[in-house]
Length: 239
Picture 1 (cartoon, rainbow, N blue to C red):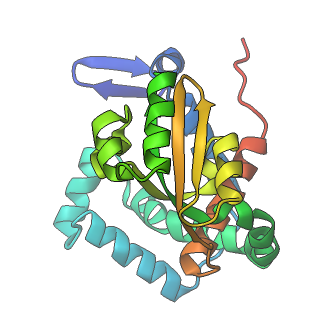
Picture 2 (cartoon, rainbow, N blue to C red):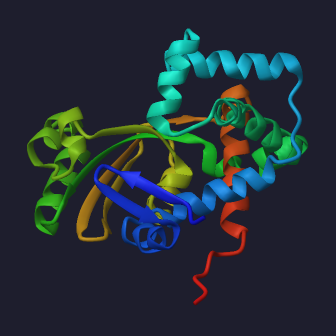
């Protein structure tokens, strides 16, 4: 018997779902979930880890009784076994990441540290090169404050904060801007430079070194995992 899916008044066959997956751009998420399921297939949780994962899932979805659990199953189409698998999936994935890359994090952190360090800087940007030069000279001669000029003339969202940007990781910035900030001293005002369509004035405010704490370890684990995902074989349609 061919499996069918009922959505409202429409009945869909398994074959009909393929074009819909393509149309609604569901393939990337489907591919991701399949790869995750394969990765965690052999990951074993302790009874305590499984119970904690189930408790967190129940709290998240307000499943505090057998009745609410059954209502959840009816609404989602999951079986009770499916719900158990769904509940433990995040914990298994976290354990998989730790087992695969946990021992490498210290070295990876040192390798990535220059990109992970954060900076705070002030910026004025405008498409008018003459205006940018004029504003730079006014700042250089202490005729105006940076926040006032940024609020009046900067053409980006930073204008609302008086030109202040950050803290932001160096690795997320434009390469030229990141290079400039990485060699800056606090309070250093840089002459006008062009970034894309804008002429910008940059003043470096503060350097915040990345810390190898639990938050950073989790970020690095996620980076390693996402890189691994992208390296997996692409999905192809076969006719």
